[in-house]
Each structure stands twice: as C-alpha cells, then as structure tokens.
Image 1 (cartoon, rainbow, N blue to C red):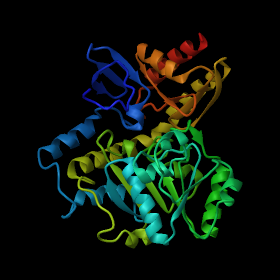
Image 2 (cartoon, rainbow, N blue to C red):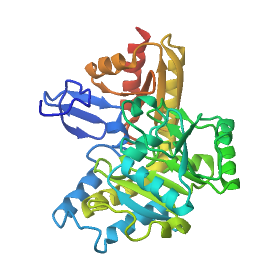
Image 3 (cartoon, helix red, strand yellow):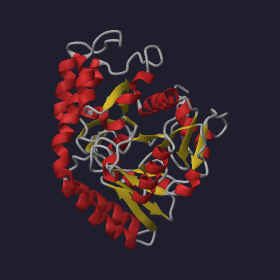
Image 4 (spheres, one colour):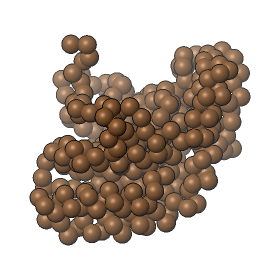
Length: 373
C-alpha cells in the first residue's frame, strides 16, 4: 500500500484543466463546481497566474525568511492595506495556528471560544478549535477551547470569563454545512467581544478571496476583525496561507515566536500577487453572476429531496434527504464535480470565472438529477 488510506478517492484521474473545465486521462471534460475545494477562485490555469509563475520559476523558487522579500510586502499591502500586519504560511490550518498563537500572546489569556460544526483545520490547535466530534475522534485534544452554538449569542455569553483571549469563527460555516452567520448574531458578537476586551478572529480560509462576493466575508457584516486568516484561493492553487492582524497586535509575534521555512516564498508570492490583481478586476462584475446563480438555486427549493438552499455569494449548500455522498458520486459520473458538507449537504463552490452558460447548464443537470430522486 503506497499511500495512507486517509482519503476516499473517486476512481478518476484528472490531468489538465482550464477555467471551470477539468479533463481526465480519457480526455473527458467535467464541469467544475468545486474550485478544487475553494481554491481555483479565478479559474484553473488562469493565464495571468500561469505567466507570473513561469516568470518567477525561471528566476528563483525559494528564499528563506532570513532575507528581504519585496514580493511579500506587495502581497501584504494588497491583502491588508494599512490597517493589518501579515504573516505568511503554507495553508489555512497553519494560518489558523498562527492566529491562535498570536491571540494568546497578545492578550496573555489562554482560552479561545469557537463554535459547534466549525472547521479550522487538521493540525493540532486548529483541530482543537474545530467544533466537530468526528474531527476529534480517537485523539486527546489540546486544552484551551470552548464551543458555543453558532448563531446563538446567549450560548457565547455563558462562556465568557476573564481568560477568554478570542472568539474564533467562520462567517459561513463551510465544512459544517454552508451555514451563514446571521447579521444580528455577528453584530451582538462583536459588541460582546469589544465590551470584554476579547479579540475577534475570523477564519476566511474558504470564505475569502471573493468567494462570498466581496474580497472577504466580513465586509458583508460591516466590521473589521482583530485577526483574520486566508488561504485556499489566495494563490489560486499554489499552497499558501496568511494570518493578518491589526497593526497594534503585531509586536506580540516578535522575533523567534513563530516561523516557516517555505512561508511566503517567491513562487507562491508571485502567484498570489497576480491572483489578487485578477480578483480586484473581477469583483465589480461578480454580483450579476451571483444574482443569476441564486435565481436558479431558488428553483431547487421545490424539489422533494431538498430541505433547504442556503449560502452567500458563490458559496451554496443544498440540504438533502438522500445520501449526499451518493449524489456527489453520481454527478461525477455525469461529468459534474461537486462537494459534500455537514451532515447531508451538497456544496457548490464554482470558480468565480465560470462562464454563466456553463454554470446554468450544470445547475440544470443537477436539478434534473435531483428531481428524479
């Protein structure tokens, strides 16, 4: 057995991709409504990203963080502007690890409140922050995490003590079932945190980089987090993560407190730099596509096997009464790539660049399939 059995791999081998279309080793074309689990936000093999990668690859791939790296500064400025200081990692889980560490260092407190059905990664602190028993199964968990009920402010209030460093949440729970935070809940949560000198830590690993229709999901909720994380679509398929914190918190991550051999290397930064430029040009026109998407998804509410349709922007969840894993498998056989989430939710994360005609055609096929169940 050459590989560990920790993944359930579908019996298909993809060999190339262009925007929202993937090709297998038999040259069959598949419509991608997954973005590689929220990674190809500006489309697979985006030509501008490919060009930036190629040019940088011919110069230098790796420079350790012992030396200046102007590309990091460029990307940091595009991500956080003048308000945030940035640390670069290699993944969303690593970014969340850094955020948890910073929250504790900056406040001198040890406890983080997160939420049931959340997902923050599979490294140890990120896993402990994740409010899912299935993720914790068979392993001792790190201390210092308490779990509230998502969208229930009273459940948060009961956990408040003098030792709470931060409240950590996704504004749309992705792995947990594509469940958006309610605006009134977020407003009350931010006030509660500020009144108690608690940091707000937002996990934007899946919701960021335009996924919800704005660069970051917190923009929909009209506040600025103290700390937030980004990954997945940040370099459009090249492994990267970022932890951003308000400038006042930056001194807490002092020399020697944290680091990464590969974090922010030139190849990754070249990709992220151009991806952010592409995204900035894309976002002003994205709302039209989002409107079309949700108009079509409204038709799914009438299907017998659908109990709910929810989400935000280009992030949708269709709650089903039939086994979602079978649906994902059957649709793959129909050359449509989709995802599952939560207990029984079909998750759609199409590339933001997917042609509208392709998007509608794929949704019609999914609707037809579900209507026959």
